[in-house]
Amino acid sequence: MIAPRRFLPSIASLRALEALDRLGSATAVAQELSLTQSAVSRQLQTLEGQMEVALIIREKKRMRLTPAAIEYASDVRGALQMIAQASLKLRANPAGGSLSLAILPTFGMRWLVPRLADFARLHPEVTINMATRLVPFSFATQPFDAALHFGNADWAGTENLRLMTENVVPVCAPELLARTKITQPADILSLPLLHIETRPNAWGQWFASNGVVAKGLTGTLYDQFSTITQAALHGLGVALLPDYLVEQDIAAGRLVVAHGGPSQSLGAYYLVWPVEKSGDPSLVLFRDWLATQVEENDFLPR
Image 1 (cartoon, helix red, strand yellow):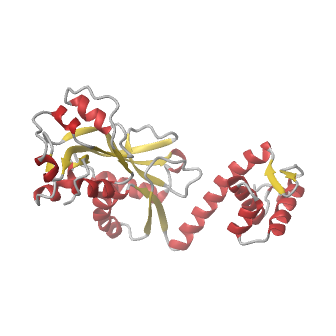
Image 2 (tube, one colour):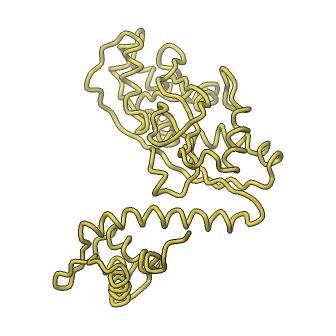
Image 3 (tube, helix red, strand yellow):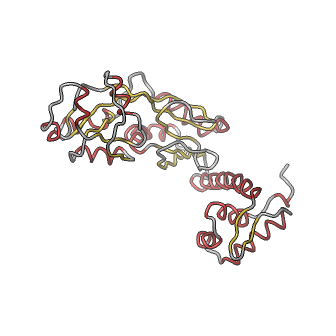
């Protein structure tokens, strides 16, 4: 049974409350929602009257939420995201199902996208919508049914399918290596290190696996593989990158291996989804298909 009308406020009032909690001022709320400040105030007054609870603390010309309203706004935010997600699915594919998927940009483009034609052929009734996310998030507040994830299988409140491990190799521009003699792993410490934001401990793990005690590692930080690869190509330092990503640059001589060969990183790639979505028909089809794409010692398409 649906709750009584008084417990189902208008979307407009709930959006005003959520925006005030997130933005902190009625002026910013009015700009985001394309309303006047007086209209925002009326929406909030209507909500207070319907709930019969004080939600707003008014101080001169400023408004802020009560502690109870802050908690309420957090719950409302998740509900609004769910409504938006359901609406997106309906609009994207009214005749069938859809799946909203968060992807890691490089892995998603290099591993998943080349395989999707097969899924589309087998399940033309399911639409896959994709957007980039670099770090774990709350499925309760983000409009996704599942996500590609690198790391450990420790994403709270989710289940997962392990896709593959990752092998990394230290690479740099040839001219950088020509100026420094590298005969053992520790020698790499004499070169500038390039770090990727999503693998903050990668260099420490690599040195440890090669028997090198390396503390306080410094260097420049990059948020995506595309930018750190360009930095390595332009001689800014040594980057520890997935072998599938740099093999063409190595073959063409644009990059060289600083020392050794590929080594396995401590993380792996997973498909993760919230527990409550486990039975979603579109997700089940996608997950079962994706399981057929996973092979031992799998290699990314070149």
